[in-house]
Length: 369
Image 1 (cartoon, rainbow, N blue to C red):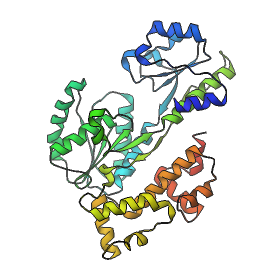
Image 2: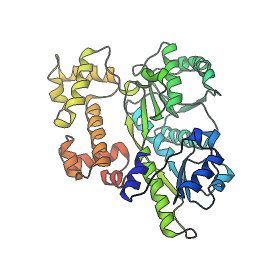
Image 3: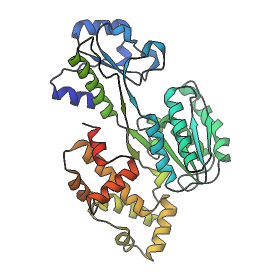
Image 4: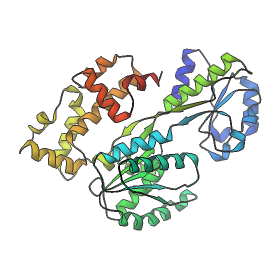
């Protein structure tokens, strides 16, 4: 909604919202008659309230991730780049050079699941690694604990330091709970990445806060949906107009399941906090190591053991997170962002950004305008 409202505000559109629980076909007809909108954006994550394109009459409609069913074929849509989600998860998991990979899902047939799994397996094949795929279905929340119990033997059988991609955060929470029940931990014996960055029910909030997740750019999705509606309105009801828009994931929210918090190493925990505060102020690994007893080599070994990756990786991660925020939400020049975030030159920033995200800073920014 933030992205859609941002586009609407710039064009002085009025935006009305219908909650899914209140949006029956009859309620939709009533709203269309009352507001006479130039277009509608419809979310498709609630199967019980899917609204077919035919229900909107002649009003243009854009769907967020429409179902793969005949009634929605050819409908205007904004969808996530599922392959890019999997590739981003792989980059995060592969940073520690794990000996094995695994993918886990609650679902088999959904398009987005198939695309994420296929792309992740392709990434594994490209580096010559095997990737096992496992499914643990369940039908309702009441069956969640049973699902977790069924995961425990699977977790116990995975190799040490196995890297696990859970196709979304709901699945990742189940895996994390199974890891705890199996007496294993992350990131020392396993690493885990989920996706979407949204599913955090209150009863699993503390557990969810430990799981690294590929965050989707939902604000960009809303913005592009509004763009499609504007293009449709501008070209007229019978003219051809763009019918689809794909939005990429935003970033990885790095948490304990891939980077660790150094809980068994209080000094590494302190180093993590220093990096969080000072990474954009020119902090280097050498300067950081000087603040702790022992040699720089010993510090780097202990940091990697506790965090699952190097101190330099952590510094770069913090800098890139800040750079992405500035690129997406400000008009600050790229060179200024590079220096503000602690990179020595624009070229250094450009190289690191492309290696970690697969795109240039300008491409990243332009995709959000």
